[in-house]
Image (cartoon, rainbow, N blue to C red; front, top):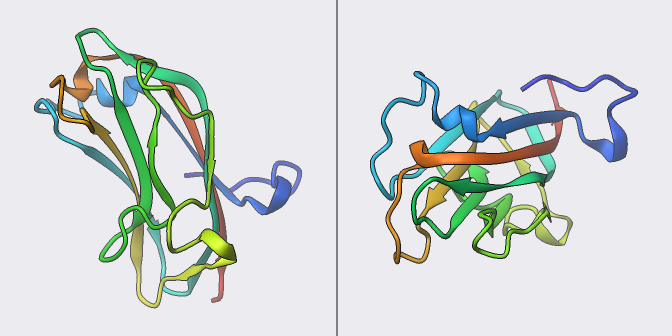
Length: 155
């Protein structure tokens, strides 16, 4: 996840990560079984404070099969896996949410999270959230989402 320049750092966001449907089709992603979540991680050294987390859904995700929902969460390793952004719909067939911001318990109400020791920010994509139509994230044919974070290094 690249740091943003001062000119790009609007409203306090310092880091951003773009994920597209192609990230689930790459050799690095490998074969993903039906109904299996995929988590992307971003390393946070000890002393990192997270005060803001959000996303913009540029293009809703869709798949080549009968999948009808996809949820995304943002949280912290070894703790609240949806503490930054609670489960949010991002699939074309599930009333996708275009913007989400600080909806998890660790960041709502102007809270913040500090990494006392090195850890990871977790971004987890979960297909078939409502357990009605199984599909694999490898079947995604469309979708782009941009995550933004405000991170402060106390070191």
